[in-house]
Length: 406
Image (cartoon, rainbow, N blue to C red):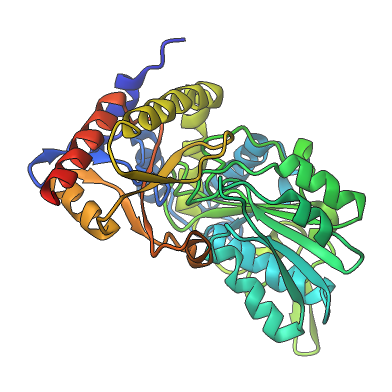
């Protein structure tokens, strides 16, 4: 198949604008992706044609909006290979999904001196909630270190697994290093001891084929806005056996069967975890984004992005005095680097003057930056609409930055 890059780029209107008088080169996809026309139109239709609060009305608009919302849930379940649609919980994003598990699972099943395994490469969203739980309940956090190439020290991981371990929580792909972690192996080893596993899939869901049933993970979290959908919508997949036993994360309307001042009974799955009016417009947009990804084909996207990634690594290696962070053979989607002797903010600011958008800083991974002994990096992250010509523009921009600093 010849990848239809021109057609795809035409589906993303923002790519045709200029920044500082230069054509936009957008390499900040690890932070958020741009949205195709199909997603924007799906949301517009929801607002203009049938906007109404879902689940609670008997009138036509409410029924139509409810059907569109639940159809989006069905698309998500199919996309990730969930066994049941009711195992798909709508949240505001990966952060809320992880906090839901921390609060609902953590409060019910974790006690003082129980141990949780994390890794040195986790995003703050998969660190801070567990630290808050640690303060509340006295659980212990065991941190798996990384090797110099950005891979996990699996010997330490194996050593941490014990009878006190009650949860493993890990990023599928590092948002700094691009390392693709061996999640299948991790799930298998944890399950041999009856330990559940939560996977942060924020950087993986738009690049890799994810089947939660085959993976056999207990929880999988991701955000819509990193996979061409709107902000403010995300997913927590959870195995039915856990979700049925967990208490709701927050209370209010929709998540109840009966409320009195003597007590409350909760709604069935998935609704007991979706208190209040959900962001149904964004959920419909997420469904449209899945349709779009599937129309291109995730396998085709992955092959094209791998080609782009390899080309970018090859071209960037031509630049003198560049340090790469994360050199694992199993990595994808992004490149973190520094031009030696030049602050990443300076690099990012000068690239922006040339119309090139990259992310700079610690990328919400300060413990990892401490391990790498740096303050931050420049991160170029890729999507299906990026091109080799844009990579060339980045390379030319970096050469100019180096020249400006002598």
